[in-house]
Length: 329
Image 1 (cartoon, rainbow, N blue to C red):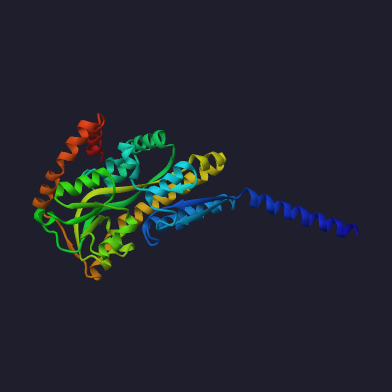
Image 2: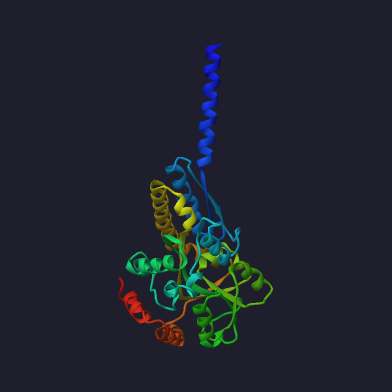
């Protein structure tokens, strides 16, 4: 009889322990707009999620919602700000309120992956992140990479004249709208989630993104040409809501921060190394790549200079920061 009672007590204590662990488990919802096969989601699934779950011994669980499953970029970014979404991976959509966040995407400013990484992972990136946290109250975990942007189109663009009247989808941010207009395009701002249908229905003639997006989003099904302009570099920023951050212990915060660094390191590597593979894949899908010669590139850079003059006049810090970025090695 005594043994039976002892066993019952043991079972009860075991059940209590299990329910206590379950009660303390925190599920972290991560939202982004990338397709499942994009390097961003590969890195989140292979580094961020398993590292957090393993190191926390199950106290933290990560659920990834890719491809706009929790809403488009603006919706999930707002969700992180108000705490309804825990972690988000937006682009620089916040630059209207936090202008410094837009600088990496200013045209023809960042030269290559090495330069971009030095800028974003150094003092300039830290200054940008601090500006974001102060203004929008989200905590920056890591800078990662979307890539160098180029134009995909349904007809060939090989010189400045070919831009004239081209119906081009651009992200709904001022610098991209201005860039498209400066080149001579008819700009149609729209979220990424609407782009495939717009091109399929011939509402627009093209769009611009890194070619990893062209591949992972299937744009090669409705586009025939890519102009390798590398006209802007688009980073992403992994951010966490203040609401979740306040819930975590110091040890859990360290686990999340370490996992974010591992994810970002891996994602930079995947993106840089994957360019030639993406290009080969798209060429096999019959996409034609056009590389601008020096004269064409100089003409594009000259066309966008008024954007810089406007920003220099508008933001007292802009000229100095651009100079620091150009000097970064």
